[in-house]
Amino acid sequence: MAYPDRYLDDLRVGEAWEGEPFTISEAEIIAFAGEFDPQPMHLDPVAAARGRFGGLIASGWHVASRVMREYVELAPFGATPMLGMRIDELCWLHPVRPGDALLVRRELVAVTPSRTRPDRGTVRTATTVVNQDDVVVLTFFNLIQMPVRPTT
Image (cartoon, rainbow, N blue to C red; front, side, top):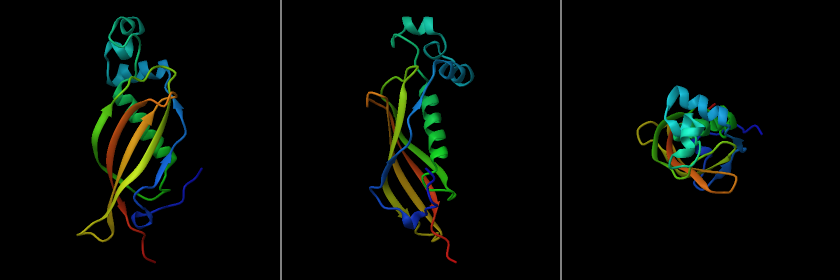
């Protein structure tokens, strides 16, 4: 589904949407961990089985990066240029295991025009990621700078 271009002045608090589910594979978990988070619980199925999680789990940073990719691919505001400014309250709440299917849900919790720059403002979004059992695995808020609709 292609979303139309939307600007700050088109948005309303309370709007919500979800993306398409995506699956995290064992190979993907190990590849990401090998490059960015080389801990045994992410890299070695045998060591992970002996650890506190009882098996291989994805790095939280891996899950967060897949959520970002999903956002870019979904393009919920079309081709409108945006700038990520901040992530707040990033919480990894439940392990993500090989084969888990994740679904991202987002809601606009604030839409704020700039007091000093009338051509832009910010959008604060609450993000919740659930697995195939509807268990929340990750949450965060992000702040995005967004332009107002250009005048013609």
